[in-house]
Image (cartoon, rainbow, N blue to C red; front, side, top):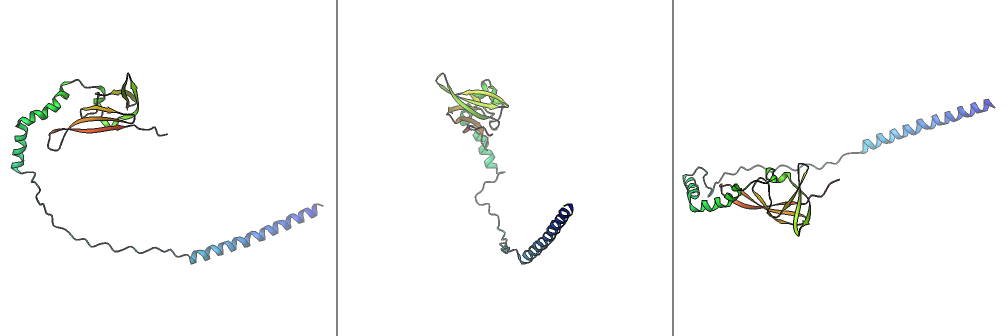
Length: 181
């Protein structure tokens, strides 16, 4: 009985060994054949366009070192209009600053809105602290004042200097930021 078991085990092992080697050799031969037939097809790169330098033409550009430009800027500063321009910034300089004016607008995020006592209010998050902002509140480092609050946006007016150095008003907004999980 044990002799037949041993002979069956040896016969099974011999069959398995014979089958494994031949299929592996066939597979390797097929892979080599496929590699030799495979040719990559790469389209040629087009020729670069020739570079043609252009002459600089300044046209009617104003010379930044022109004496007339400097003179006109000085006249503008001393004119009566300069006092009206400073009237735009003077009230901002005279009032006491609020807490949110110590932070730039890009560090603030609007996280919600609500209506309190019939007036809209926005929830602004700065440095992990939550602030309630109403119409007329000041925020940002550019003398920003809240002019409108909706469910998704806070609109404010900022007073900044333009390229010439004059004080101008510009609109800015903070939009509701949805929580990213």
